[in-house]
Length: 77
Image (tube, rainbow, N blue to C red; front, side):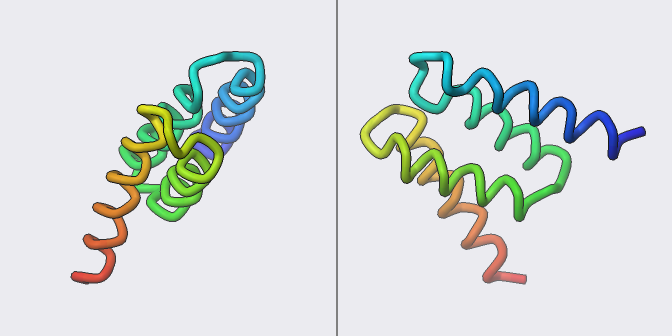
């Protein structure tokens, strides 16, 4: 069931990112969700995308911080 819900949720969320003026809000929320679900590789990809697309926005800066934290955690293991 989880394999059906996650992709559907991601597609729905990503479908609205181009329509909003929130500069990465939806992508950031999806990345947080992925992180909570322990899908860390996908969370990193999303944080990288946010940082690249919206580097000067609040979400771009938050994404860069989270990405750095995840990379640091990964290097400790």
